[in-house]
Image 1: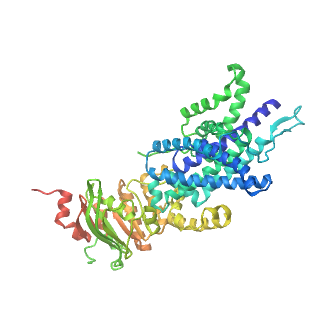
Image 2: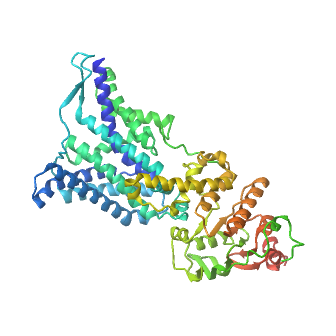
Image 3: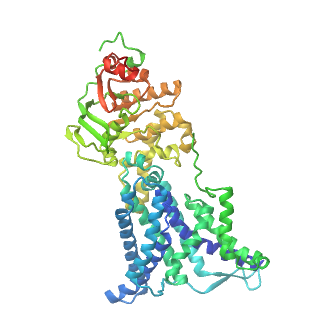
Amino acid sequence: MGFFLETLFGGLMAGMLYSLIALGFVLIYKASGVFNFAQGAMVLFAALAMSRFAEWIPQWLGFESLLLANLLAFVAAMAVMIMLAWAIERLCLSKLVNQEGITLLMATLGIAYFLDGFGQTLFGSDIYNINVGMPKDPAFILEGMFEGGVMISKEDLVAAVIAALLVVVLALFFQKTKTGRALRAVADDHQAAQSIGIPLNKIWVIVWSVAGFAALVAGIIWGSKLGVQFTLSLVALKALPVVILGGLTSVPGAIIGGLIIGVGEKLSEIYLGPMLGGGIEIWFAYVLALGFLLVRPQGLFGEKIIDRV
Amino acid sequence: MDMTDMNAASATTPPGRRQGEVILDLQNISLRFGGVKALTDISFNVREHEIRSIIGPNGAGKSSMLNVINGVYHPQEGKIMYRGQERQRLEPYMAARQGIARTFQNIALFKGMSVLDNIMTGRNLKMKSNLFQQALFWGAAQKEEIAHREKVEEVIDFLEIQNVRKTPVGQLPYGLQKRVELGRALAAEPSLLLLDEPMAGMNVEEKQDMCRFILDVNDQFGTTIVLIEHDMGVVMDISDRVVVLDYGKKIGDGAPDEVRNNEDVISAYLGTSH
């Protein structure tokens, strides 16, 4: 039982980390109807900016405080992500207003490759690390109930809490503010949104900035866990089944989807793995997503578009 | 105007109160798409507080005309005077800022959002708080939301759609969707309202409701309305003046009765014998 709980908690927290990346996909899809292939590249780009600025800024200004270095690096990295959002809108999306979804998808694919390269040109291509003081040692809970207790990773726990907070903030932003409403309006109908006075270009800069923010948070957490290197952009692939499961248009869906995938991966590896010869963790999420597509293509919480004909 | 030969619908609008100044003056507008001439040398004006209809057979350029007024299309030739000033090239969102609201021929609502949220988007321009204020001063932004919510409730009451307030618009029947779209335009408290076939595809009852709403908007708020409609009965009943287009050219302009008896208009609609 203790072992089961350990696996379960491990899965939940790994799932939260997937959610964090899935969130970036959902944000952009919700607010512009584009599936953003560049999300993984943005995570890498943001993490690179964060780790390098945290190294450079103390050198430039001549101080030693880690906390201050991290804070300034965070601000600088966010500024970089906003500039990036602006550049993407100006150079790419503004030329593609009213184009088919597939055109925009291809554009984001291009952006992804560009960012992969550009990030390494700007910030270097070695393996860097991010140290924001995440606790690395594990904690033991429920020691009274099970022998030896249940081990959980403090780092994952912190990450899960941060991800949960981010989700609450973003969900409120989308549901309750006029900008959130304008974002959803743009996603639904460009023409109608313009006719009520919503400028598309401004909205797109905001959306990509918010997605950049989500990428930065994901980049910091994943980066401090795995190190900042090229493979960081591949964790985005892990988030694909999450968004399919949770629904591309739902912020809470990204979380629930992430949790299901995280738990499913870990439990299947432990309990199904021995029967199937192991290595399930790698493909389990995709099979789950595939099954879901057959039954419920809009995902658990996605909007089912009902068209009257 | 002679009261005796007016029918029931136009009698609801008092004569004499629609003699406002010219608010919108279109001068020699020509619009081409490549080699296709959508509009050729069209001039007409819209007076404040009136209901001005644009009619014509399919493909006559009615919607193009509306899109020119609203900034979706930019005519190659001609001048647009709005409130006495020559209007520079502008985008639709800027037109909205100048008080021009519109509905679309094929309903353009935000399908995933509720009726309430859809109409609320119409208030976006009136809301002053910016992104940072929304993030940092949550309370103040909430207060503003509530104030605007009251306005939206007024619109909802006015259009009699209280019972579907929370329904996602995609699930509503066609007639109600059209009403929500009108609601979104009204929420912006426009001075000029452009309606592109507000009654298309409706049954008689729905049409009557829609007529009543349009007349009430015009009457109660003094909103100037430019209307495209195919139902001649409706057009002749509720319009103050009518413009007739055919193949992108203006073939008639005037009070409903003048237009009805115009030779060119009759032949455009019924065909001519040669």
